[in-house]
Length: 367
Image (tube, rainbow, N blue to C red):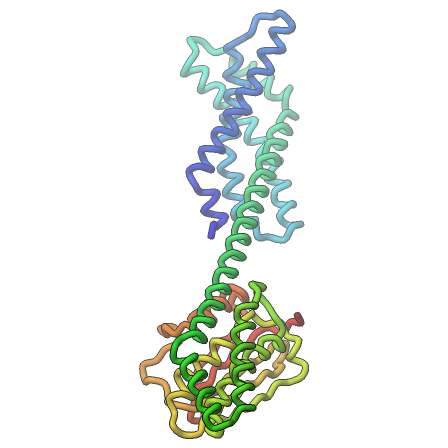
């Protein structure tokens, strides 16, 4: 993503800044020249050194200070921001008037054979045009407004990239989920179970499993790309998956749901629990020959919602670390949560009571 500070330090921005003041200088010169031509007076070319050349040269030099001050104050409260820049604008106008006069003297000594004005004449002229410093203040605010516009553009660009990136991650999560469901071992196991049920004349259960498999694949394909769904919607997809697995494992699998009623309307990321539950079967339940337990709970806690998925099964390797995990489910989920909640979440994995517990804590917000 584009960072605002990097945008303002980019060499193209600095070149554009120089071009901006050069264009204004040329425009001012053109106006003065046309006015003289219409009045049929001779144009005083030497006078260009004091205005507009030295005036805009001073503005260009000081504009870098405006840029630095803006980067320091851009995150301040609006009233404080305005107060600081109001004072800085007045000071800018005064400094610009003094500096432009100094630049004029130096440029005359460099490029002219004689000085147009004596120092005393310049001092008198400066005093008589004292309030012209307000023009420098006006240019300060023009330049500041341009910086604010560029900043908002950069932030809008960041927001767009952020949205596209999140949408891409959600699509990838959907594809990964569907890929896991379409893997040969999943479909083979489901279809093999259906075949065995038909041979045993367990037609009712076979029909139930075919229907559940059809609903699961249909729901996965029909899922849209919205970032958030209600917890109730998320659990509905999970239950379709568990309906198939519970038929496969029959008496060997015990499902336990503990969902508080007031959490069902909570806003959660789309496809948050599905990959976690699939991992629970792949790495836990399916590898155990004993009775297996899968527990899913959702509770309210101090303005947050806690979502837990527990499965019995083999323990974690001694050197296992969540940050080094290469699992699709955990990696995709944690990456999406970081972007969606900007650090205002918790994703914890631990061994608990002879199994594997994933605990996700999110801010509670209604869908």
